[in-house]
Amino acid sequence: MDVLNGFSLKGKVALVTGGSYGIGFAIACGLADAGAKIAFNDINQELVNKGLDSYKEKGIDVRGYVCDVTKEPEVTELISAIERDLGPVDILVNNAGIIKRVPMTEMEVEDFRKVIDVDLTAPFIMAKAVIPAMIKKGSGKIINICSMMSELGRETVSAYAAAKGGLKMLTRNIASEYGQYNIQCNGIGPGYIATPQTAPLREKQSDGSAHPFDKFIISKTPAARWGNAEDLIGPAVFLSSSASDFVNGHILYVDGGILAYIGKQP
Ligand code: NAP
Ligand code: GCO
Image 1: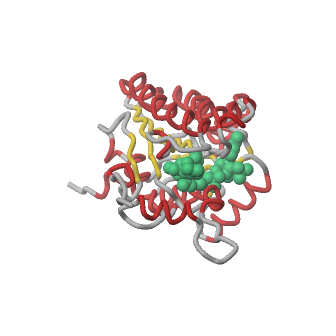
Image 2: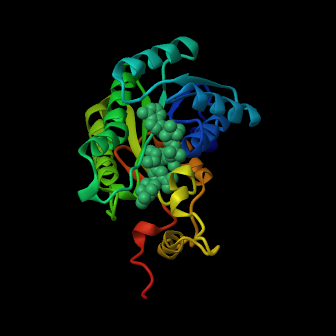
């Protein structure tokens, strides 16, 4: 028996949303390394071009598309274009996401709705668009990028926590509804990962000292460090491959141990 073969993605088509940089980019590179043909989208041409350059630098052949994941007609067009260019999507990674850090009582309802739209409604739109072809093919993998905020709350991230908590349940529901068609839908819950999204939480203070949130996260993480986007590659390859064919509706937290730990006593 060739165990490693079970992790191979040879012949598979993977779509990573918001894949021009950060976590999506790292995951897409990992899936490519495991043999998948990669498609990614981002919200504008500038970001897609930036992504195309970065993949090229790594020697990875990809297709990049402009598509706003919150707009169903654009998503329908994206999926048709990928089917035409590469074939039906075997692996969907719902990675595109936004955060707005505002105290809840000061947050405009429109901003709350925007976060829910990108972080929760869009994964629904994307999954809805790929599931029919997966049913036809008799297999499919959907990975939703969840968060620590799928489990925990904190000041200023009410919309994000509501969306990522909802995304955890959307994951379980897709698994429940479409598991019978050999479709696995799982989540990855990254811990605190050093990307542009979290850069404001790591900015140095004017006196050159570390940001208090930076120190807080390191003290809350048994691994005593921020994660790198590359820390998510192994879990993403596993959940994309036949090695995980009986894993469904699961959220795999990749957090250096944060959720297991009560924190240091003061
Ligand atoms: P990021 O750096 O902000 O990347 C997200 C990507 O999605 C960006 O390219 C972004 O474009 C794109 N995007 C936003 N709205 C979109 C839309 N409507 N349509 C298409 N693309 C859109 O974030 P990241 O840190 O790599 O995070 C990626 C995912 O992991 C997100 O879902 C995030 O919530 C999640 N996550 C991050 C962390 C962390 O610590 N970094 C931890 C847990 C979970 P713009 O640049 O224009 O926004
Ligand atoms: C925040 C952060 C987080 C992380 C991540 C944790 O402000 O607390 O941005 O929410 O990005 O999602 O898993």
